[in-house]
Length: 100
Image (cartoon, rainbow, N blue to C red):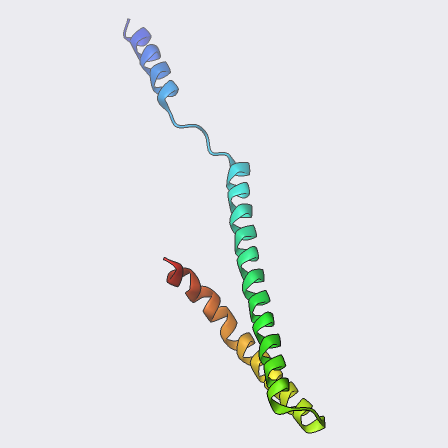
């Protein structure tokens, strides 16, 4: 009689147990997170390139025409690209905290 009660209790406990872990579900979640992070980084990189192009165009318009002004604009563009390469990853980590 006790064995029957144990079997019934064991069956009831198995019914209430949480489902087994699904490794494919975990992979899908990781994939979604990585895709969202990639989209965010791509958007941030595109915004930086657009800002650098606008700054170069404004610099070219303000300096006039000629080889010396072209060299200045190129130097300014390279300087912006280096600054973005150095500070871009830090800014990308900081921006999610700013959005909250």
